[in-house]
Image (cartoon, one colour):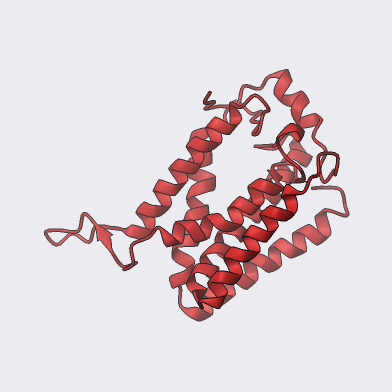
Length: 222
């Protein structure tokens, strides 16, 4: 049920080679429903003026896109990406490592993580006897990263190959450390940045995403 490392098998390689990026062969109406749900969540928070929540969502989602672009570039250069999604598991594949359903989930993941923090985001755990303790934001990021890494290991073991890991050295541990921890650090810390720094971070992040997509997709690199 759970797969913790890639196996380097011919089956995994063949599955990756058969992936149809941005093909509408499996397209269905769930695409529209999921998009409507995401719009509802974001506009509800905007209507309530919960802008910190919006910043959290956008911060993580932007990091997600940068990672997916890098993963697609790795696949183009080295033959196989670090992670992939199969044709059978989705209605639409955006880049070789991310489908529509997964991407929309990540558009909400930062909001969920941020809302799970204590109301006082300055809370520190294990703070006693003069010790400063550990920030609730860091603890929250590590907890969410671990949960997502374990769930990804489940997806990698599904019969329809929802996730495909080709490289034997890639699996739950590197996913946890190098991918999900940065995701949730972004969602938990960016909203509380000094306003100018926060704006600079988000504008730079999303400008880079836009530039890379506009340049690399027409070139056939991603």
